[in-house]
Length: 151
Ligand code: RB5
Image (cartoon, rainbow, N blue to C red; front, side, top):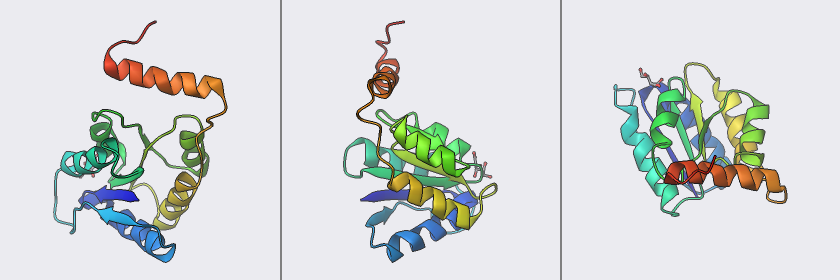
C-alpha cells in the first residue's frame, strides 16, 4: 500500500503516478493536496511520512515543485528515508543502497512520463539486503537520527 501526496507544484506528477497505480492495481491512499491552489508542502510531507513511519504504508511518494522541500520535510519524521529522484539510476539505487521509503519528485523539473518510470522502478526494486555494507550504512542513518552515532 502506497501513501501519496503533493503540493500544488507537484499535483501534475501525483495525478500521473496515481493513474499508473490504478492501471497496475496497486493500492494507495491520496493524502492531498487536491487542487493547484497554493498550499504548504510540509503539511503533505508530514501526512505521508507519518503514514509510512508508523508502518501503515510500505512506501510513500511525494511531489512538489522541485521534490526538494517536500523531501526535507519528510526526512524530519523518524524512520523516513526520503530521496529526491531525477533519473532512472537514482530511482533504482536509492532503493538498492539507501532502502529509501519515500520517493520525491518535482513537477517543475520532471516530466509526467519520467515520474511514472521512476515510480515504477522505485516500487519494484528491492533493498540490497544481502550486502553487509548497505545494511551497515542504513543502520548508521538510524543511529544519526537517534543521536547515538558512533564516529
Ligand atoms: C512551491 O512554490 C514550491 O516552493 C514547492 O513546490 C517546492 O518546490 C519546494 O521545495
